Image (cartoon, rainbow, N blue to C red; front, side, top):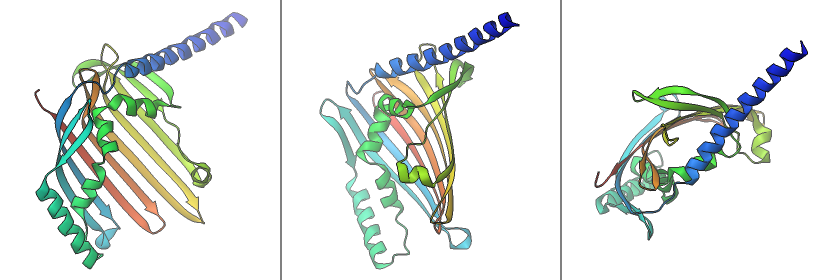
Length: 250
């Protein structure tokens, strides 16, 4: 009886050690990437949103294209003058009629330097996401028809004290597919939450899918889809942002 117990405990310890090694290896692999070398690309971004419910809901669908350069001189974003002029006219119309939507403005709000940098240097963004994560599963799988290693991780809620007090339920996990050398190929993040504040309930969700490519010393997100929902405090919102990064010279 004691022998079986010892064997079982050793098996559990070995399982935990293997999980720890897989997460340690992933962090080491990501740390090996950086933002060295020049990168030029075109970013196509679509922001599709719905605010409200039923017949009263307002929808907007904004699409923009941005020139991206990232290298020794830093990140540079180029916006077409006609696009900026149309966004300015859109903002002027909104000032006269607050019921107007601003699809171009919404899309431009998503194309911030920080958001674009998270695409051109995915390794740093993934390392931040892994901070405090717990590896739940590591197994052989396939991605795009090729062999891959799948890691499944539980993610913590990153909230201040006020947010933690209001939150009643939170569940978030991340799936990462790695190639034979441990480089991330794709990711899927899902999260749901609900809570109550000032006696008012709220809930929301997040679904994000991304595909990665190693470009020299960089890990780049060549495509990403992120959908967020939130209801509560009189709000009922859904926003979906889809980005495609087309690398030049490839």
